[in-house]
Image (cartoon, rainbow, N blue to C red; front, top):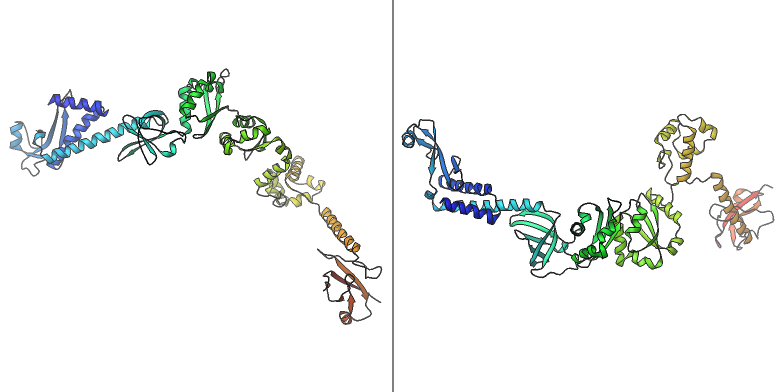
Length: 524
């Protein structure tokens, strides 16, 4: 029996990949399960192995009593003294139980417990093994396909390559060799699930670590990878040593290294560029293989930039269906707009910048309509705003109305702060002088009056008559005599100087031509 048990333990260790400790624990749990099935309770059962772990025994621990109530956990004094002549009441004895005395049901229960324990132990050990490999590349073989998911034989376990993690360029057949990245490991009721991917950016990173020794030993580091699986990948790299060219190290002599990566990715295009902390130079590099003439930062806060290229480079910079510039946007984390030289010259950069700033503060028309209080000015010194408030000055208009002598008398504010505040207001607020607005209004009215006179509106009025212009429309001033009472005046009829239609004093517009009317009377 010892030889059979030793061989069984050795076979479990070899076939299942289990340690000897786990195998012995499984045997112990199996015997305890059989004991519990046979006697209904295993609390007093003890399993012991010999020194070489080639034999195992199970014992029932029983208490010596005078009168047995529970035969499973108690033994009578007389029966105990047959086993041990020195036994006394209250002592405990270990009585060996022969496993061959277990019935068939107990043995079957023990077998099920053993199989379940072995499966759980194997699952836990495999989970620990593959969980540590997440982010690493593994090689397997195409086994079968179901609903687009490819099942890969990894040796000890079966991996799954979902449809969404497969490159559109790749076609597989049975027994094809597949190299993929382990992205996730899960324990399921059916077993261990190892999820694989060939579209993840870390898959490209791992391939470069295999093909480029400088990347593996961190002499050359990958700043960021962006990818459109099956079409194009962009890599930004930098070197930790001045004498090592990061791009040249990844490309290799005559392109040997990069060609190996391209073959693994089934011909996917790869752009390797140098990372630069300066966003202008980084954007230039990111738009490769296109040559960028210049980069203009439109809004640094919003990460908006404009790349200027020659006409011949425009389509190359944008790429097919915008792929190249889209990947460049993700790589540098900037919103890049590509323009030709001619398009750039036609742009009003100043107005574009003003519009961007205006949108930033939520006012497309400018700051003047939104900002009224000093505390609302962007970038205003909070202490200055508080000091002005203590001087009963809250609004921008109130501050601008102060004379220079009055600003010098403000408490808690220096002359330099006053100058800085005025500059801030000039930058963000459009100030319209009231007199200028009135002059503009009068000029508009005078132009309308001149047009009315040129049109002969007053042609039917006696010399010396004047026109009156109401707000928004031209009108006629008709003078008359006040020799009659006001009631009689309302009954009198006059003639419209424009069209000749009959009008009365109570009319404000001509019923025929619609022109505005105004009546003025002089005392006799």
